[in-house]
Amino acid sequence: MLVKSFAAVILKSRSVNLLRKPTAAMSTVPLSLDILSKFRNDFYSDPKNELAQNVCTRFDPFEVAISRKKTETTLHVYNIKIDSEAKPVTNQENSGRCWLFAALNVMRLPFMKKYGIEEFEFSQSYLFFWDKIERAHYWLNNIVATARQGEQLEGRLVNFLLKVQTLVELLELYRITRKTFTAEHI
Image (spheres, rainbow, N blue to C red):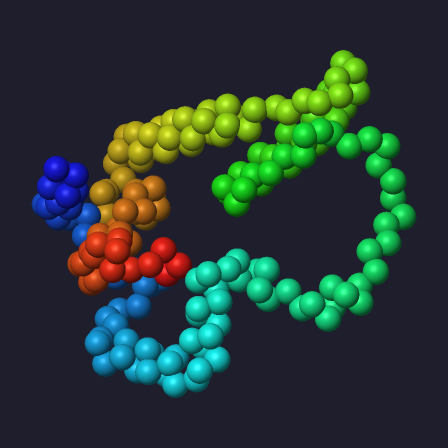
């Protein structure tokens, strides 16, 4: 059902001419099977690449890339003492919300001191939810504003707001495949 709905959206978008020629940001030369084959052969011609690929698909590449020699010889000496530290320690778990965690952590310590609280954490998910609502509101207001200004559907502003174009082009070029055929690391 989802695929049929998505296909209907794609077909409808074609009828209103959302599909355009590739933009300057995208290559106008399509990747051929020959080029992709050459990239693959070049990659696998060096055994170190396959080793790196295997390691990076199994472990965090940033952890693997750490130079053990440098970490062993680096002295971590800090000359700034923080009077107190807020508990619990917050962790955004690579969720892309570091900006929100950082802002709330800056506010948290003074709040805890003011009210004599030993452990406290502001709700990041609460503000993140409203951030998404506000971003959607911003987007919808801008779509309405561009329509009122007479901006064409193929216009620069609408194109900026409707970043679906890239997805449509990717689907046309590469189609889709089952998740089991392509591992998550790609």
